[in-house]
Amino acid sequence: MEQKISIKNLNVSIGKNHILKNISLEIPPNQITVILGPSGCGKTTLMKCLNRLIDLEENAAISGSILLDHQDILNTRSGLPEIRKKMGLLSQRPYPLPMNIFDNIAYGMRINGTRNRNVLREKVTHYLKQVNLWEEVKDRLKEPASSLSIGQQQRLCLARGLAVEPEIILADEPTSSLDPLSSAAIEKKFIQLKEDYTIVMVTHILRQAKRMADYVIFMYLGEVIECGKADQFFSDPQQEKTKEYIMGTFN
Image (cartoon, rainbow, N blue to C red; front, side, top):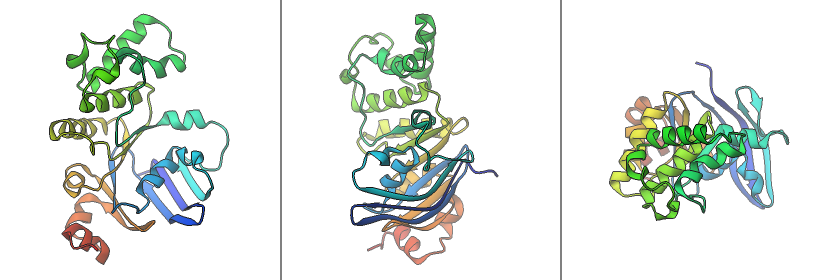
């Protein structure tokens, strides 16, 4: 299988802290790749590298390469908006734009040149339905997005990201601030979306990883300890640290 993302010898330091150490990975297309590991192991930094948000960090030193469809996105100064458009990021906590529900979805489409009101209305409806939010908000489209519950806001942010037609969904602990019902809704939607998107998700919840992952990457202290298909990873881990983490005896 040809890989969607190929990371080779990635090193990231911020100031004197060496955060990512010689990371080399292959991320398969149209699957859910889950990045596991304790807090502070470099998971979020790796996600920031994937859509070049790492550029916003002061005193960041980066080496290596990240190939997206054979293009090295790490060693280019051009096309950053296009790179970030290809990789939509869903954060731990939802950050709706300070505007109404309709305009939250339409905003990115307008930036990318869609102006026709009928087309915008049709697409906003489509993406709200795609995240199972339409029935809840169809009579509230002119209300501020901040009036929605946290779980609804997270689904709104997912719809906003999908509306710019990315190829990859990056999700950094996307259910950590949600109630169980909202978490289940996001999980179910991701499993459906992988038919059309490549999904890379950070979580520290083992149960969630077991429910969702097709492929797993386990990180510790800035290094990849083990990675592989989810079935094998959870049933027959090869590294002692991985076994300890899965068994809950990790120190």
